[in-house]
Length: 199
Image 1 (tube, rainbow, N blue to C red):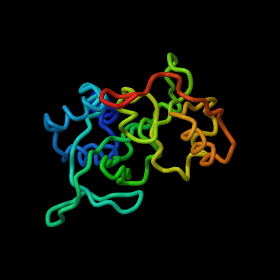
Image 2 (cartoon, helix red, strand yellow):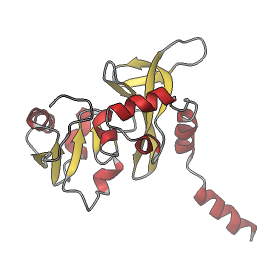
Image 3 (cartoon, rainbow, N blue to C red):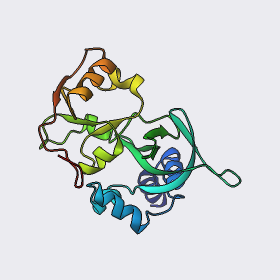
């Protein structure tokens, strides 16, 4: 009986890597009300900042496409952090600084925000939406992906039948990254204007 309980407990306990990712991410602080209000002004609902895993605030040191958390003695820069969730669970953390639009990974295991949707698409959505940055992704209730490591786009997205770009320029950028191979890239037909933006 003891062994069966131990086996079940082991199945319910996340792997060490996922536990490390989760704990590192949770060292960040919850968003302040003014940050939540600012996201709301930009068209992001508060619920989309917390589901399925919260957007947190932290201090980081950016180093190209990677970052480190600013530990004691290191000042770092403010950034929002988000979990990168794949088929196997939480595999990495992304840090995003909206003012500079820098987006980087902690471990280098992730490919994109929302990457689980690459292999588990929403049957109610036509194609896999690709966003330029986390703001568009959060506005869309995290439906789609934000590519962080472009060098892997061609191999990771090769079996996706249709990608949905934000606009014509974005479609051209995606075609360049994919080297004109792989999925059909179409334009998003839905209105993408956030509250407060000029028409």
